Image (tube, rainbow over all chains, first blue to last red; front, side, top):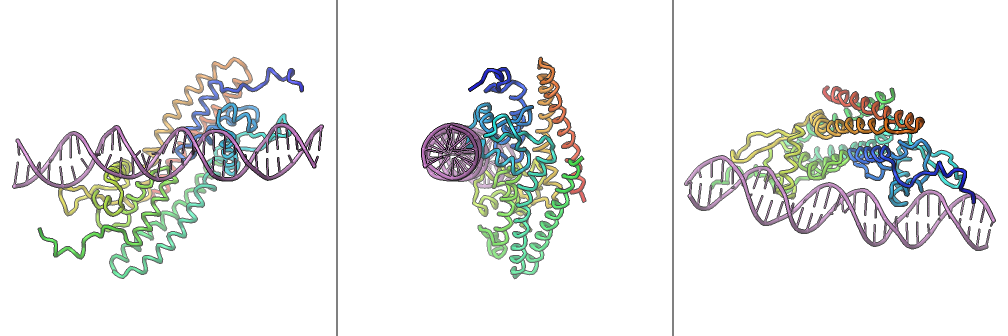
Length: 170
Length: 170
DNA sequence: CTTAGAGTTCATTAAAAATTGAACGGGCCA
DNA sequence: TGGCCCGTTCAATTTTTAATGAACTCTAAG
């Protein structure tokens, strides 16, 4: 084995202050979206790292378990928030963060929000079926109005999401 | 005491199927925003109720504790998602749901997202202060670029939020 | 074929969040 | 003034969620 030549570039197994702050910023940030802290930490460290990192770097430097990192990376990959890239060790998979906001938001909308909206559509259908069963005329009218309102909400949401993506798309 | 006359209008202490479905829809719905299930249930029941409800109605019909309902109502009030109204018993406070989506979303943006963004601004300032301390020229340039990127993210978010509100404002 | 190390999975454990319920404050009427 | 009831608060508890780590798969090198 040969270590010598690259020693001065060796990654520290701890975070410098700037990294600490960015990691913490993302860790807190992702929580408004209901995501686990570890996911934010992982993305945060990739975001502030000039060099791509492998799983083991994340485990060591963030001090979180291999299992958590594996799951966090899997999730970030499905969002399209990180990219697999080549690195010094051919046996390992290295990652770098995609620093476009639209990628993050777009991925979140696609993976987390759309599915909910789809199931919402079905549930409104079921609701409609329930409303027609209502015997009392005026109650039925009231329920019908409310279900129609929910339909409109869903349409508005469908309108807004692509709009967000367009604005973030520059 | 006199019950007779209004017995047929008495509120059941359980939910009918339509109510059950709407309550459940909202209970699940609010979770994408990271809010507790009980908040969704409360809003949901107010949403499908033609008559305003008092705290006790919610406790009995949703089978959740007085404490939870009190806190849930408090939260929904700060969002502006519900309204206090007069009701049959002058001693009680009755509520009805505001069924405009913009109220819900607007309240959420104002109460939950803006504060985070404000603190984010401060944290970016702190980050900037840290970056200038970096001795290594090229590292400093890199960090500086990333912090600038975060600044742009914040600006984009500031741009998007009012846009959402305008679109929902019909 | 065997070994070694990267990466995943998932049952267990630990941590965080929501819910409960008892105690409290305050208004109102007798 | 005292009893009653509505509503709030918050410490204790339960429930939910995330993190851990050991066992596993897979690939590649010897």
